[in-house]
Image (tube, rainbow, N blue to C red):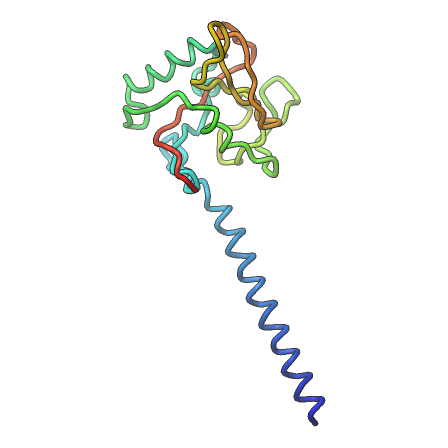
Length: 175
């Protein structure tokens, strides 16, 4: 009898522990799924960083590859026209752009190439895999991020070679 009671108690504790662990895993998965919210106005909000992004990169939005200077002018134009009724769009920094890279997620391949873009699938498909940032690198170059690896690149600011940008609003949380 004592053996049966002990066995029942141990089995109950095991099942209770599994249930709590599964609930914790489910909450973790759920919170990751909820990180990005499509605002249905051409923007996506990131609950982890506090940033708001354009859903489409500048290539998908305008149909043109941009050099660094053109990307800067593109952001200025978004503010002048009030894209999604906001007038405070920014040219993203390397740090901001890197928050979008997720090796475990696959958005699509870059338009015209086999390069995989590792961002949340909520973002526009078949855009650029290389996005310019506001960060400059000397007199003639600027930095960006390649979204098949998440690494920074440095290129001549006049280069248009399959490059775009993605406008951002807000400032990074310290999470």
